[in-house]
Amino acid sequence: MQNYLTIDEASELSGLERENFIRDYIETGVVSIKVEDGVKSIELSEFLRVFPNAKSKKVDSIDPEIDLLLKQQKIENLEYQLVQLKRQLEKQDEDYSWLRNKFDSTTLLLEQKLDTSELDKHKQEIKKLSEESIQWEKKYNTLLAANELKTLLKENKELKEKLESLNSKLSTTKINNVANTNSVEKISTQAVVSPNLSHPTQQNKIATGSTQFSHTEGQFRHSGEQPSTAIKPKRRKIFGIF
Image 1 (cartoon, helix red, strand yellow):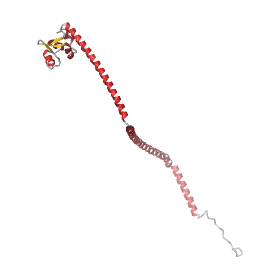
Image 2 (cartoon, helix red, strand yellow):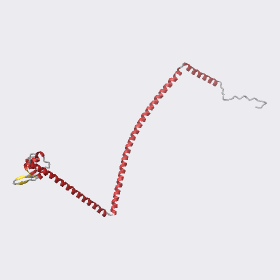
Image 3 (cartoon, rainbow, N blue to C red):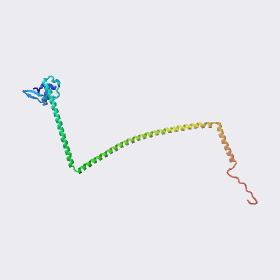
Image 4 (spheres, rainbow, N blue to C red):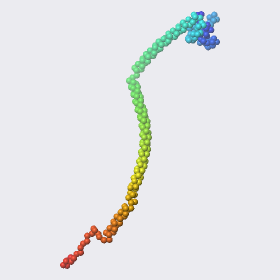
């Protein structure tokens, strides 16, 4: 019985209560049991298959021989799993090689069966798809350029509006400055002319000059002289001949 565990030993190694172990593993058939002389037992390898990581603290309460057998069975189980993994890898390599050869042979057969016209047809389709791809790429680039141009135009419009606003403000400021300058010049001119007109001597001189000019002009008019017309002398009769 060294290679077998009782129900109590198996439940203790699994870390489960006896009732839970029986209900969840034995009655459901997860762990196979052996009945001999009315005694139920579990083979170590079967137990390790279901519980490969049995708690070591439970092993301390078991017979040292059973502990050694458990370790040996665990090692054998790991070695068996390793061998199985190697076999699976080898099988996968074989399957891959077979599929690869099958694919190559099928491809070669298809290439041999395809005539020149079909090949040309496929080439034309590939060429057409390539051209369509290029056209779509051009359209995409054109769309991107249009979007960029639209953005630039919008920015340009905004800058233009800002410049027009600034120019309008500058023109208004300039007009105000010119008006202020003209007002200052007018005030300065009035300030210079007013003293001369207000002086009595200057006013008398201007009045006297005007009177003299008017008197002289009156005399010229009363004298009846016309400087521009010459006076002809009277003709006399000489010996009855004019």
